[in-house]
Length: 526
Ligand code: G4P
Image 1 (cartoon, rainbow, N blue to C red):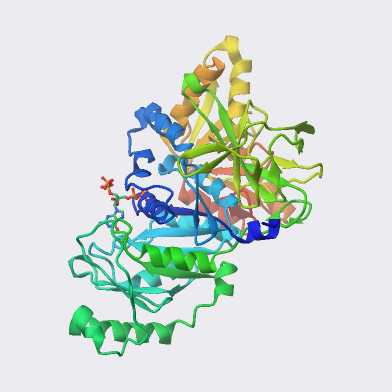
Image 2: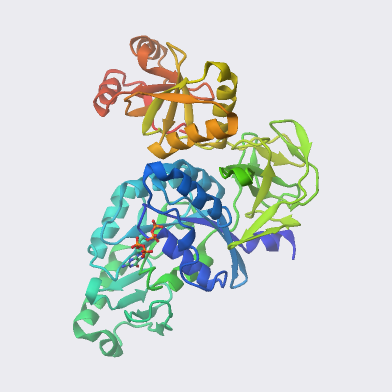
């Protein structure tokens, strides 16, 4: 097959959700359709379970297992589908954001009873930054749910994206009868019994056909007709172009656990979702069809298990063909490297790849050469646009606890930050190092890894801050005044960008009011 054919048939995406909305369950059902696994529960067992923070070793053990499922590939309807897995644990949210830079589209799962949750919003804001096309799957309709119209309004309002339902639920909870597939014009009836069996949907082009009553009874028929009419009136016809530009999210309803409404989602996804798209580099746009290979590292996985202390750098192929045992330029390091055993990930099977195409992910064994954002090319000096950092939620001063080994501590911290374990800032007035994380788990992981991998010890000192804001202004006077007055709260990130550490929502608000010409950003990319 030609390279263009290979590109055309690839779909690289991620399924994301607020924890517990059903991401893992939906992923598993997709894999079942793709024949990549044949038992329900196969993915589930790899999921990072909800564990107390002190149990991070257990989480790491599970993370080790989940390397194999970092990318789950399968073929379906002639398409090569690559699902990029994202960590289930909230404390590793940064990993998820980075993974989103390597996908061409996203499916967001929302719990029908809970609606939009905090993590859903954050994930959507990351998608919005790159205009990533998004499909929404509203899950758990077999449980009592919010009104579907209210859910749509909530999504539009809170996720700031226009929506267009492509399937519609008939009842919910104990009354759940099924969904009407507006996209395929089919009726899909729910029978609560067969949890894994997928019933054939019934072709149903005209809802005024009196046969509808036979299937779902008079009341539900009347409601469905009314609601579908309302939908046709309120929402304009689905426009795939708007979806591709990230301006419109098609919405599906179903129950992942019952494998219900999932096939419609997958079928439609394959019809409308984008093949590998161009990638933005500092120098220029990189088109997938270019002859020369280019790729970037979006994730590094280090195994904490002392018996397998290997690191894997995950490279997204952006253009051309990646080939085994071929010399490539590591642009940042300015040196040529070749890889004898690059791996691909087909479901839970790892295997050595000879070639990989745009949209594919290859895993490269790494002995510390890579950091997140690094570029590999056939010689061209290309730098992919940085991956965004988001304001951490937790801040700690980090202190050396072993005066004899401060060099090791510096080296360890540097490397861990390059892997993206957490963010490091430096106080402007006192030069002290500040670690910023999403949760306690990352702090534990850092301490543990410093000790076991670098022989260094660190101590944390509480720094009760609310957010780190990257600041920007054209008004030099205001900026200078702000810097002077907030000297104690100013820091720089690892790239030397200036951040303001706001103590509380109130202090941030005060600063925003007092300095209207300064912009305060919660992410490093704006
Ligand atoms: P996550 O990856 O987004 O965190 O969610 P996950 O798929 O693990 O699902 C979270 C919980 O919700 C699981 O229950 C799962 O079985 C359940 N669930 C997922 N989809 C549906 C659905 O369509 N209907 C209903 N009723 N439940 C659903 P759990 O009790 O936490 O785990 P488990 O013991 O069932 O594995």
